[in-house]
Length: 264
Length: 281
Ligand SMILES: Nc1ncnc2c1ncn2[C@@H]1O[C@H](COP(=O)(O)OP(=O)(O)O)[C@@H](O)[C@H]1O
Ligand SMILES: Nc1ncnc2c1ncn2[C@@H]1O[C@H](COP(=O)(O)OP(=O)(O)O)[C@@H](O)[C@H]1O
Ligand SMILES: [Mg+2]
Ligand SMILES: [Mg+2]
Image (cartoon, rainbow over all chains, first blue to last red):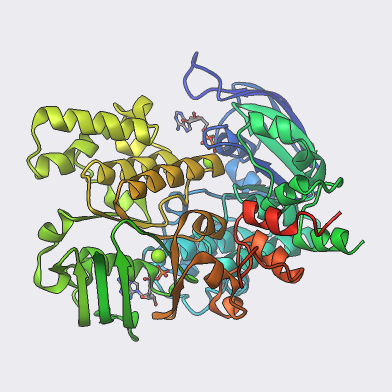
């Protein structure tokens, strides 16, 4: 669904590239992008969404080059939930905020409202429709941004650190949304630091390190490469580390897998 | 010595419908590292702000009971008086930035100028905290050009530079990557080792379990329990409070493996490994 070839990017003309020579293809597997602060993850997804222009290389979304598309065309195809909700939120009520993108792609008011309310139900904010987004807590603001993007029903949905500030219940909501999008055959791409969440929810994991792809593969393969992960300052999930220390041969990703292995 | 005494604290925000804090009592000894946990809206931030006097002095509202920090009763002292003893790092670092300073360096200097510290001592302290929080390389940047993680480090640095006796931190590592949070926890543990009393609201249970000597569990404004991490995370009703125990505890519980010589389950990687080693394989 997305093909990235020889992509390089720097914010300043001749400066140090933030991303260099990235080659990646994305299919419908749910994909996690992990790596240290400053590795270039946010920059990468902004390029996919067409918010930044590649210094070098090419990004194809479907058959089309991102460069050749207008923002409105991309809005129907690819949704991005920003890392910082304040970069996204600008309407006066929760409902208006969620409807904005839908009205912007020329959807009728009635349908837009219906879809917006559905999305807000999904994140548990449907009892706060007329509240001012700025009076929401940080975790609620993030959920509002997720609802606004999910409501657009795009084929590609990108989340930039969705679990920040979420408690257990908030993470469960996000987990359910990702599952739902996956069932609808959408490509879900998530930048995230919570390795347990990655292990439990994503088919594929890509590790960014200093603007390059250090590892790319099934989540299990990636978390089995302890030494390479260390290079990127990434620790495998807690349960994976525990199994490893106890000498279990297989790479364990979840508590259930661990218990299953012990029962053998 | 009791560093903090909270006695039947009740509090309602002016526009709140219910009490945000309902009859809370606990005591903290000097040098403890306390974790506050609970689902969102359980009252963690409100309790933190009650320790520094923003509740009730800034927010107003209905207030009952007593909070005494290092001998000062919060209700009868000004925020300025309390802030000489207690420093607070806010959940959202944006709210903490003064907005009037051009650089990270000046931002950190701001609080120190306010307490009238001599120039030389100021320079020394700023240098020290920039290094401790690993933000020396951004000291000349505008606070608003920092990444979320860098801003969080700056917010912690500005408070630590004041050398408060009591440090209150509200989800201070939410924007940091795992390696960054680990660094910050270690730095704070060092401060705690030097005798500073630390109270931290946090969702990362593995970290709370590893670093805090006691954990305070809040639910709907009430104090459910205040005990060692092993005891809190071994509770069978933890999920009803919207909290998931560390993954290590969940595994050991499912296997019925208690911590060696204890009646509770392991809460850290190390202890889980010890408990399970030998019984597996
Ligand atoms: N608007 C910007 N202008 C200049 N440099 C930037 C900008 N945004 C990010 N950077 C720099 O680009 C690098 C990668 O940043 P980012 O993509 O945000 O990383 P990540 O999301 O992996 O933490 C960092 O060194 C960061 O300081
Ligand atoms: N400024 C405020 N005005 C009114 N109610 C508030 C305010 N801040 C928080 N509350 C309410 O107080 C309760 C506790 O909130 P808070 O202390 O922020 O919880 P936590 O930090 O655990 O998420 C919640 O019900 C919240 O809605
Ligand atoms: Mg980012
Ligand atoms: Mg809070």
